[in-house]
Image 1 (cartoon, rainbow, N blue to C red):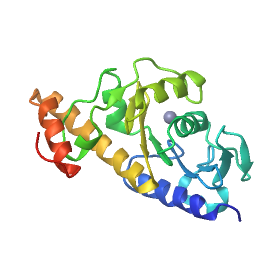
Image 2 (image 1 turned 30 degrees about the vertical axis):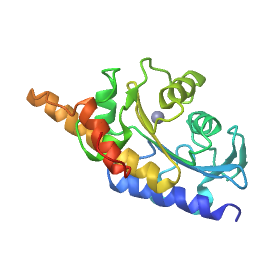
Image 3 (image 1 turned 30 degrees about the horizontal axis):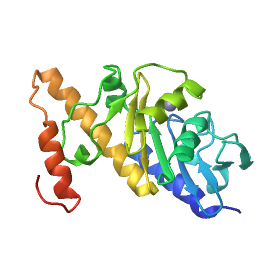
Image 4 (image 1 turned 135 degrees about the vertical axis):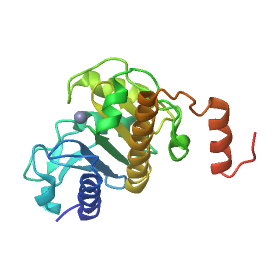
Length: 214
Ligand SMILES: [Zn+2]
C-alpha cells in the first residue's frame, strides 16, 4: 500500500478524536501531508470511523484530486488542501463540528480568551459568514481567517479548523480550542466575564516560547 505512514496517522487521529468526543459518526475530517511526495492523506466521505481501515483513507494531490483509495475523499477536502497550499509549515489539519466550538462560532467574533492552554493560539478568529461544507467560499474564508501565522479558526455555525506542523500539534490545537470554547461558553452562561486580557495573553505566550516576560 502506498503512503501507509500518513494514512496510519490520519486513522489514529480520527479514532482519538472520536474517543474524545470531538467527532461523532462520520462528521469532521482530518488530513496529513507527506511533503516529500506532495500528497495528502484524508478521511473518506461518509464512512463510519470506528470500522475504518488504513486502506480506506483517501490520498489526494495538493489540489484535492484523488490519487488513491476506494472511497471518495471528504467533501471538505478543498478547505484542507487550500490551507496547505497557502501554508508550507502546515502538514496536518483537523476539522471538527464539536459542540462548543460550534456554539461559540455563532457569535462571529474571536473566541473569548478563557483558558491558559489555548493561550498559545490566541487570537482565535471566527469566520464571519456561513458557507456550505465543501464550497469554495468556505475554503477561502477559512484560509483568510488562519492567515499567514494563525493556528486555528472557528468556522461560523460550523465548527473549528485546527492546523499544525504535524498531526500531534494539530490535534492538540483542536483539543485546547474546543476546551477554550467550552469554558468560555460556561463562563458566559454563568455571567462571568473576567477573561484573560490581551496583555496577559502575550505575557504567557512569550514565557511559553522560552522568552522573557514582557
Ligand atoms: Zn465541516
